[in-house]
Image (cartoon, rainbow, N blue to C red):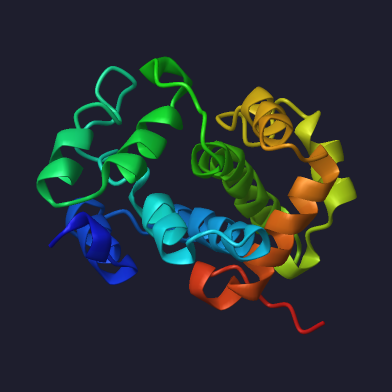
Length: 194
């Protein structure tokens, strides 16, 4: 498979090969929903942005620590034919990798990664367990609660939006809308009947 023809389907196959956790697969799908929405808004290559989102944490189960993820996953992706551009974006989503974020793709991945996890956590604590019930104002308020979703780095969320050139509340609203559009695939429709 050449770099030019790497598809979303091929990325999904790699993800499913390496990731057995349903929640980690859903995380990849949530990041993909946000990234695809931004690609459409910005006139970028949606397929490339989807592939990047799906693969960004593909190696977490085999390299579940900061010393190895995503560094040791990168050669696997290279061997599978994933482009330099996508692999660089994946490396740059980790602050500790030493790979700076320069392209709009790299900045988008960083901006969407932690936020999508936080939004998922927000949906799970709603009475309906639905992303359709999550609103930007409540997300901003909940971000101040350090005990809630404590593994999600708030600075990454804030810095990601800023580096991507968006006001935080607008970025949150955009990602909520993208995840709402994919609520069923993400398992985040819950019991919402709205």
